[in-house]
Image 1 (cartoon, protein in one colour):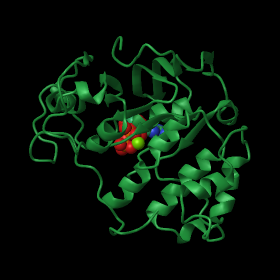
Image 2 (cartoon, helix red, strand yellow; image 1 turned 30 degrees about the vertical axis):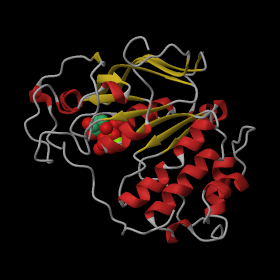
Image 3 (tube, protein in one colour; image 1 turned 90 degrees about the horizontal axis):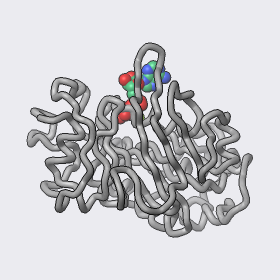
Image 4 (cartoon, protein in one colour; image 1 turned 180 degrees about the vertical axis):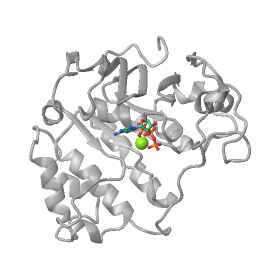
Length: 294
Ligand SMILES: Nc1ncnc2c1ncn2[C@@H]1O[C@H](COP(=O)(O)OP(=O)(O)OP(=O)(O)O)[C@@H](O)[C@H]1O
Ligand SMILES: [Mg+2]
């Protein structure tokens, strides 16, 4: 391990000095992260911190005003989104965004349309999500939230990406469904896929990622391996230096364990406590009953 956000391995995905504006609003300020091949990194942060903006910019859906995105050493900052898919970047967007009137299989085939060569055939996706093959002709709109999330992941896998960007997989799903969705990620990473995921549930992020980054109002405020982060450090990075109240009633970010382990994280830029967004709060509630299988 070297500095915050980097490791000794050369990064497959590298974001350097990224700034992104939405009109007058600057959503990202000088963001740099590096994700080595085959690793799972997590981006945490409160509502409006800029997490989706970062993933969408890596996918080519927003143009940065400064900085660069590199894939395996190649500068892809100017590439159009479809060219980035062809280069190996696939995004599972926040809210899934399936085609509701298309069948499960047709949604997967949309992902396969710009398919690279690789192991993720439609059959391989059906093997990963056991229920999907039998229901391949069902319309996406008829699926539960967890099932739709699985199809959204499958659609991204169908492109055979080298980098998988996952934006809030757990959004609106019951904890048991979230656990099943997340249980598939180690298998993907073991196959060599590089994963950058956005997650509001801090415990979930710490459990699955080898490296966690925190965004606060568009700035990286913390980066390091979970074992080196304490709850207090995460709290400070998530809400600002002196978090007063966050909806958990104990000052901790959603899902933060009391102590995540010994501290060895590189310090991040200081953020005034007054900058804590009013919308910071607990992870969004599930809208699916427990027991839904994915
Ligand atoms: N298309 C857009 N046009 C204008 N402003 C935007 C746009 N997308 C995002 N923003 C703003 O940019 C900031 C960062 O938004 P972003 O969606 O990246 O945050 P986030 O961390 O993903 O939040 P959430 O947890 O709610 O999904 C917010 O202030 C948001 O209102
Ligand atoms: Mg978002």
